[in-house]
Image 1: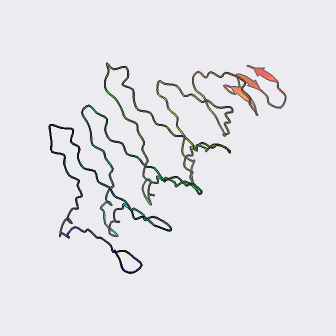
Image 2: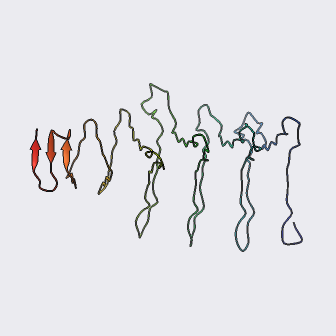
Image 3: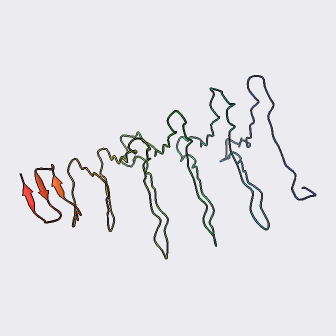
Length: 231
């Protein structure tokens, strides 16, 4: 407890070393009773509560490498343990509700590369290898915009990168041997060139604003006149 405006700080620092600095371990206790359902202790990290205003921040970061060094900056790893029969632990990233304000953001951003390639973001659901279990399905990935009770729901944006000297990046939807299913009241596709290879099934009306051409010169409907030419 601080007597002035700021409470006292607590600093845990490992020792210095000529080659490798000392490690810092924070570990909860082990449940040792093998005859009962004893669990290991939990580790709780919480910032301070602000009585009148903001709560404190929690920051996890690794330092930069020294200038001119060929080393890499340290990793930050969040990993849950594996299990034999039960379900492994989850990792949850969740911001609090804004009751009279705005809910907090979650930002996943990779660093830029000055002379090399920028870092990648990889999101992959779990795989399964039980060939005899019909319920052993691969994990799903769900991306969903927010709901609204009075206005429009949130938009889901997929935007590839731009380039100042060459073409922008591609947007690749690859379902393998599965299907790509699009369900919506209206599907608008605005692009310079839209190519479809393979069989395409459309139920309902297909509206085309400009010319509709099949193999360019084989079958063509002229948008301005409605004239149809068949080679």
